[in-house]
Length: 239
Ligand code: UDP
Image 1 (cartoon, helix red, strand yellow):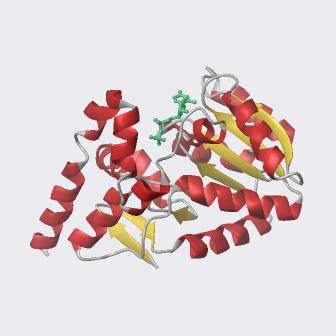
Image 2 (cartoon, rainbow, N blue to C red):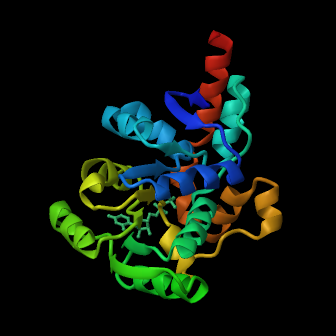
Image 3 (cartoon, rainbow, N blue to C red):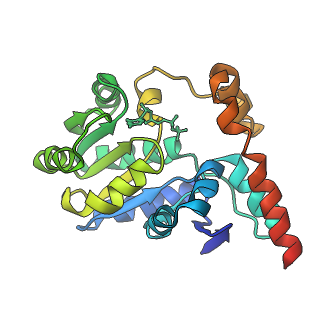
């Protein structure tokens, strides 16, 4: 079931349910894409109609941040919980490993996707790493041709939002992949360049605070996030 939060239609799923839905998409022989919006996406989509359409056109829209879960609650349409993109991606790697499928990693700085791929295939020996490409290409069509030539089943697109979502909506069906997922900085995590918050912080819903502690330069970007909560409250009172 979809729940609308400030214009974005989220799938109301637990992590396990999202993994089951993702596995079904990966088994079906046609292109699908998954987005993992956080509050920054919601604010950006308010001002960018194409981005909003691309988000709502996805096969799965997963609530990536605790801010989305709070907004949903404040708005009076609570979600079952959050499904961080990195956890959904980890679940899809497990499914791909079971299929002996092909993985392509697109995005991040030069060298990062290769290192992420090395670590992923070490843990999932049945996955075929069919290609990698950094996310600083000039020509979108040329980036697509490289991906398509590698014939992936599963594609991680990690170019930051909204670039990655627009790339998937525009080019995804020409890649031949069954499933593409927009995953922001996930390759940096898979490559061991960036740490995720310890589980204790994650359980308290404080992953954002840990990230701010590690990357204080994000403060400016994050300062606008409470605005999503205020807007959600506004929407509830309007009802
Ligand atoms: N990135 C990229 N190409 C670009 C801009 C960004 O590949 O043109 C990468 C960047 O190196 C980083 C990821 O996209 O790995 C975006 O990370 P960010 O922290 O913005 O995303 P978040 O995890 O917050 O969604």
